[in-house]
Image (spheres, helix red, strand yellow):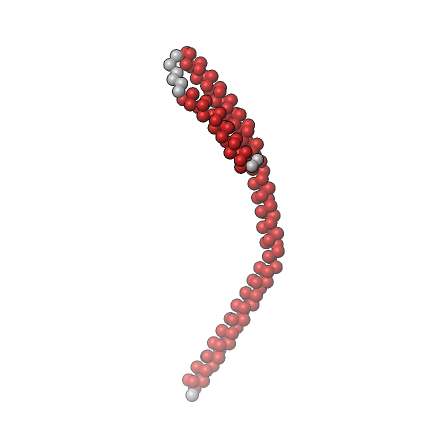
Length: 124
């Protein structure tokens, strides 16, 4: 169903329900006759609601199914994305540890050299 058909269905439902609702709201139950009239209005309201539900419910269900399929497709795509990226993520983590280890070793060498120079300056 396209947007135009949905708008037309909404308009048809409104055109059907507004007169029934307006008439029902005008009923004042004050005797047996008006009670019978109110009960008939109840039946008209329920019938109109069922008709509207019967029209729109399949549309809602179709959207739910579309959403379910879209969610499934999204989950599958994300899974494939993560699988494709996994070697790169692992390689990046590996390089990160390598870089950190190298920098720590350089810091250690620099600290040793500074200590050696400090010790030499004390002796001199």
